[in-house]
Image (cartoon, rainbow, N blue to C red; front, side):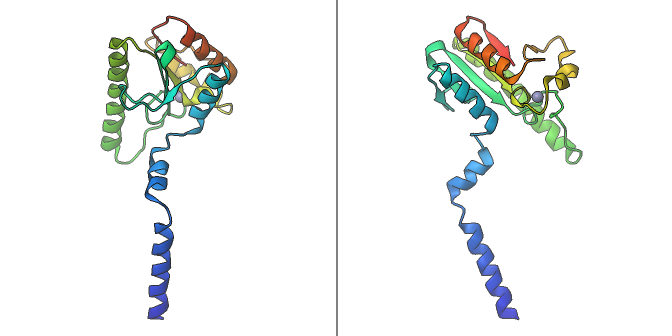
Length: 177
Ligand SMILES: [Zn+2]
């Protein structure tokens, strides 16, 4: 009995080790989230060429279109506290989470400022804008706040992507979709 128990533990341990370190890191960072891939594909089809996750630029933009000097951030609504339906705040460990979210929000503002000083224009595309299930109507509450740029409200996913393409070719400073 005792012996079988120990064998089971060994097997369990082996199973855990099967994941390579890089696989585990990928699972944690999830840089290739689906919303980001939607944007990448649309830009590629529109003829743009870009670099991904340039760590030498402020905020490590998800996508950087060198030719137009545009950094694109595809933001998860929860982590970056968009204010939409996906922006829940955990009920436990509230101090920890509030602190973390506030840090994220401040960091996003600083990043945009630093990029602007470098002459790089920036676009933020929210996860919910790229979801066909959510519907932009859910953003009404957030967009009542006039300090927010809610250009993406009421747009279909296709319209959001078209607007992004227009922005890249324009000389507009920033956009939030
Ligand atoms: Zn959102």
